[in-house]
Image 1: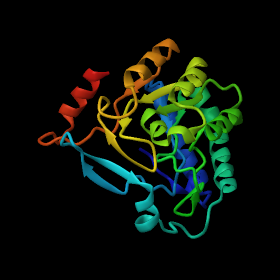
Image 2 (image 1 turned 60 degrees about the vertical axis):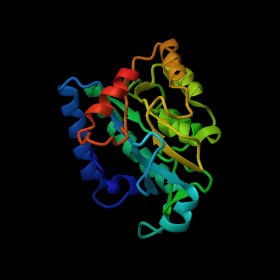
Image 3 (image 1 turned 180 degrees about the vertical axis):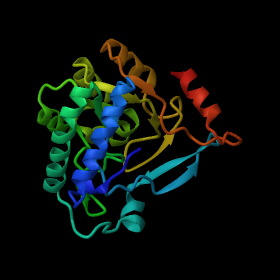
Length: 249
């Protein structure tokens, strides 16, 4: 993973970091790799604690009340509004998308995880990819380019529940039907916000069989990635979790 807050926050040095990412895209293209993931949530708090589930595996939990009470802080030197982050994202995508098109590499945008849309802010930074409207705006920004699309994270979309504007199946029908889902993070969670924990695919509230069926019906050719394996005792390399998740898929 290549992380740079200079690009996402529009700070000095972002052009040099964009050049590094452009070089990465060209290298990926020379290797014949179909796509790479991008995201844009620099002020993110990903988890509030780890828990052990009723089945005995250890996973990430996010509790919105705990976040506001114990974790939330002013992360950077100032507030970054939605206008700021949208401007920085537009600057970035306009710089890298032509390079991706020439290299024949697709850019798969991952939604903000967790998709906390109620305040529009997290740690003093606006979150812009927390629902369908944000993703739709990003889609409109690039026009008809077939090299921009989604890393559809089923886990993140399930975390948002009814606040997302379109459910997972609506996203698959819309973007999958247009060939704009390049990768799928095929994971599940216990419930929608305000509190959720990650689960194995067969242990959450989302019916992952129906998700797989929808992907097939949309003739989606995306890579399917189990993503965020729960931690199992005596499985330090996640080999058991990996095998279990792929076998389930």
